[in-house]
Image (cartoon, rainbow, N blue to C red):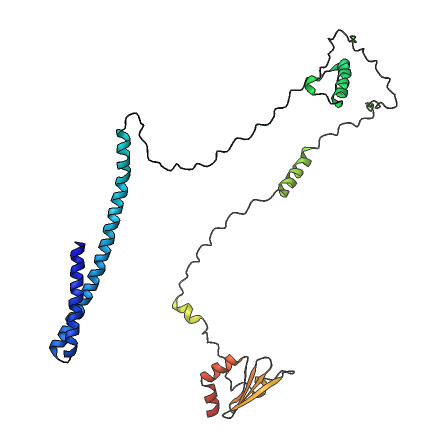
Length: 312
């Protein structure tokens, strides 16, 4: 199959090149142009087919190499098994490498048991002798202490100790109780009348309980007034503010002393004066107006106040 593909690829490549060469002189004609196109397609297909053939041949070689490698161990093992008295040889295999096994730490040395310390007077002498021997460098295990039952040592019984004389000045003086006559008599119990005020005072000192929540007030009854009562009432006139014209011009806005003028502006016969505290005075043909801020002046102008002043 590889040979057939190789031959076909070479034929396509050679035929395409030949068609291109023959059609180039007649490119201006329709036949020459067709031959050039057909030769180009044929030569390109032959080149692609030749590359595919080379790849297939390479894959076939790899397949044969894998088959030969797989059959080689079996061929070696069969003659070895046929020979009598020879153990079959196994193929070498790689053993996994195990990590080193940690060795357990050495147990701590147990302390040698110490002999029981002797008690008593004889034991005190033996203990002193043992301490002297240990200081000389002998091992504690070789030290043998003699106890009171050793026949070489004389037996001494502890003699009762005589009581030490006590100094009377060091002794605590005996407690002297006062005579019965010096003792104060028991105070009489207070009368019941005095106990009650004390109890009342204690109650007053105690924290008072929180007052109970007050009930919501009852709704007031609606009293229907008759027409006669309404007629009898004096007529309520709405509060009328005095117009600007009623206020005398001298008493309207007096310039407080100490104000600092920071600028003036003339617009259509109106003079605006701005002070350092943000207030503005407007002198118009209709009179003088005072504004606490620039916002009030804007509201005044947007409401048509400046136009009304001009018309006046």
